[in-house]
Amino acid sequence: MAALRRACPELPVGVSTGAWIAPDPDERIAAIESWGVLPDFASVNAHEEGAERVAAALHARGIGVEAGLWTPPAVAAYQEWRVPCIRVLLECMEPEEERALGNAHAMLAAVRAGVPVLLHAEGPAVWAILGEALRLGLHTRVGLEDTRTMPDGTMATGNRALVEAAMTFGLTHRSSV
Image (cartoon, rainbow, N blue to C red; front, top):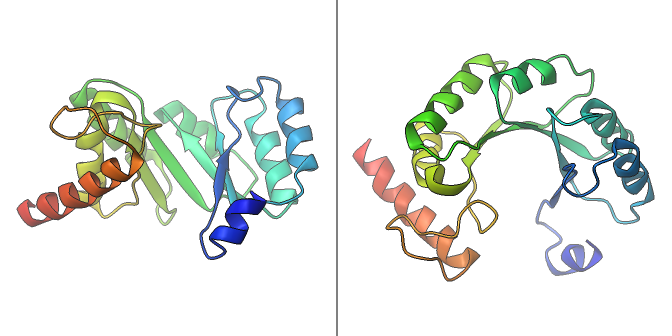
């Protein structure tokens, strides 16, 4: 984190607090409390055990909370939180494009109006969801965490190639909407 701050002081930096890093919520909270150099924000998956407690620990340290939501029930759980969030991260995990788009629209319909939204997917549905995010004027993202394939199905050579493809895809997609 310190190296990122030195190299890119203007760049907002976010991290994950996913249970895949540390399954025990108390362990995640202890880690957050031990951080010396703080990120600007951290994602908290609402469906994970202890999510609101993890979010509260971030908020107490002055770290922005991004609620990670994968399903409409996760949106409902998040809306019960007492912790303010800077953004919701709607993550469409279904591999089939139509199911991913359906989940995206179901979650969007359930999210409170006025809350900033970042819409993205993982795997085969990445490019369809990216196109939908652009069509709807939402924030989006793409990278090797999300997909290793380019829009034409070939393997990406790295994150830079994916971002460049997304920018081209966005220009093409917006001009056809």
